[in-house]
Image (tube, rainbow, N blue to C red):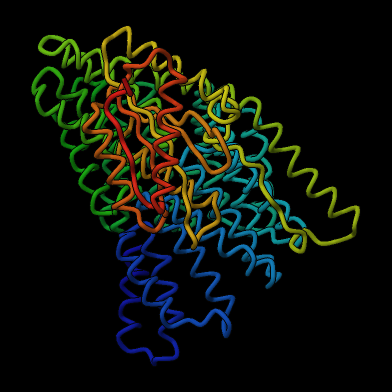
Length: 560
């Protein structure tokens, strides 16, 4: 990757002005795994040189690349908004390659958010367009992504089927990179099921194929996977040799993404082997690399693992790492790791601050409950997603219209719209009652926000999604209770003092003027029941809107 980036930078210095936009576009793509912040800066420059009306294909390609870069640095809402805005253009162009890339990119962003049923729909849509257009080259990669999505939801048999399809197709068309990648994924799939002999066979074949191809990146990935497989089976010496080889290759390529991955995997095995100091050193390097990359989904887990190493030797630093982990972007894919973070924080706080320890324990339980709910939601949402895409394909076939000319509209299967969190006002009241009673029983703080958006630049759904992600970043423990009316969303903020809740409400309006937020904030539990608290938040929201909107109104006490 370093070679490609260096060559492109060199070409940019001597290229004529007419070639600059195309070179910048390619450089932005290559920087995705090297430095996503620089990639975004390059994409900005390229965007200034491109005219959507004159060269819609290049502009659309840049938009897809930019969305992936935004996802890499944790700006998921902006990545999805970019793809939303791009969709009408792609439909108008009728470019099957760009449409399939766009749906695939959306699937990648949603996967990184842990929103796998939604990602699944996007990958399935991309698969359909690729099959319809006979774009077998792209189809190999999409089938791989489908397998990974099913694997991450614990549906390993379905994943195995997609990996097998990708493998057969890759061999048939001679695409070596996805051939090797699929063998690696098959090895990982078998490891999930504890089928170590099969896993080792796939990893061995992948490593041999990658070395024969001379593709340094394939060699790096296969070597790392083989090392993990051997290490898990207790073959420490062979695993150490391969990890050392892979790390040296990653450094020579300046491939930060895969270096972070292998450092984290190696560190975990070092912990099993009793090599705590080595593990800590590797995890510190991985965390530093994630920061320089502009963010990476492994950072939260790496900080958790580093804290676990330090719990006995340096509890103060361990606590610092845990708190830093909580400050990272929060989404469905981080729930299990965050629950572990809260568990350790509770253990550290218990001797000196039982009240704070109780707060952490409540957060842990809440995340574990959410994870269990998520698993059940996935169980229900996956067949719905599959049926929805199948219906789209059947409808196009009945009309005799190509898939890329038939707009696809995914079902909204995000956690924000799951049966657990969305629905009628009565459901919101019931959900709030649980938090209300817990707070009263434990003499803890609780705040309720009623929020509406009036963004002129976005669709209401886009603006609401951005608002929800902003609140989740500011208050990791915030709970979205649902909608009491169109465009009115209610949040519970457990263990949030009145002053802090009021500050957050004001900050939402001040810091996000682009969303046109109005907020009603009730900051006390001194009411007879939860519904009174909800009504108070709604009345305060009405006041905020009545005063012209884009403001927050909060109260700390009930009326006499």
